[in-house]
Length: 400
Image 1: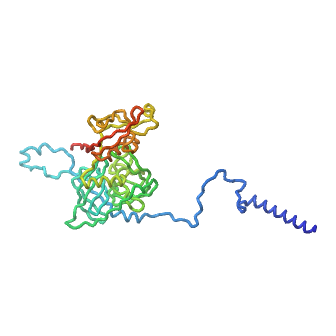
Image 2: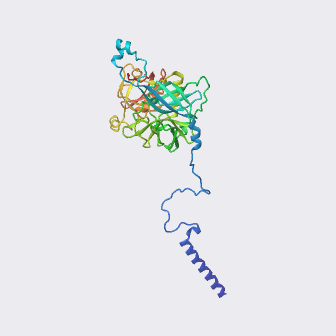
Image 3: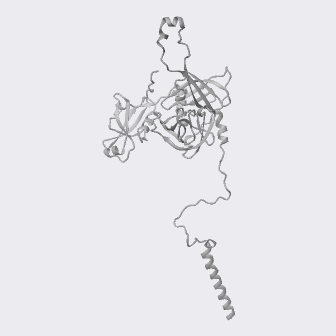
């Protein structure tokens, strides 16, 4: 009996010793956290995948889909030189000819465009074709065709061209697929396609850096996509596509030193900050231009000012949202609707106004002739008033 008891005691002792060693040196064998080096905060760690995933390393399918729809635009126009007084002298004209029909010196420009319809409609920037009297389109397949301006919208820097028929033959064009802005988010991969520096069709890659960029001083209406895909002079009017090759924007401008923000047809090179007009805006402008030849926007005749922190404190406002009405044009729709200087515009038809740019966009989207509800703050009171929307006049063009 004594012998059995000694065997039992020795077995227990050895077992306890092994348990102590294992729990000290290899606690994970027992499903426990180590005593030293234990996690001091609860964190969520990704699980180890069973099989390694292969990251997407090529966007050849997206490029192949979009490339045939991106065109090069070559423009020319007569130089704006003053007519020599001798050309108006009757004696000079009698002996040397009129000279009025001579071509004279011409200037040329280049840019890009996107075929958005098999009917030959092309979206591009207004500044690409501004003042041009001759427009030639170079297709991806090598064909060169003439085009005409269907209409333009300087306030959004967009223009619609249409390719002329080739000797009466039916055009064979590949139109790009339009994407949806609801599916676009910061961090998505983008491809910029165009004709930088006239080198030829070029694809660059980046991501969407930001959405809704405004206050850049480029256009009257700004709601840009910001991307770090390389955009250079000659890319203006080209395509910004997503990873599936769908059009999500029209490349418009870059930030470049010297000179700051400016059209990508200007001087300077890419610094990784480029801007494109969202396809949702471009499509709306394009449809209006094709239907009516121009873009119609709402207008009420007010001058708005941004609400600073100091102004918000002086007016007793909880935040800086809204637009301070600094002036009201006499006889304008705003004047008829009872809006007064000093009012703070809070909402238009139930949509909140964040700043003067947001106010301008909301009013511009209203249909002239319709009546919209405007919510105002006046002397710590919130009031609603109805305003009959007027028509925004087109921007004045400088005389040549």
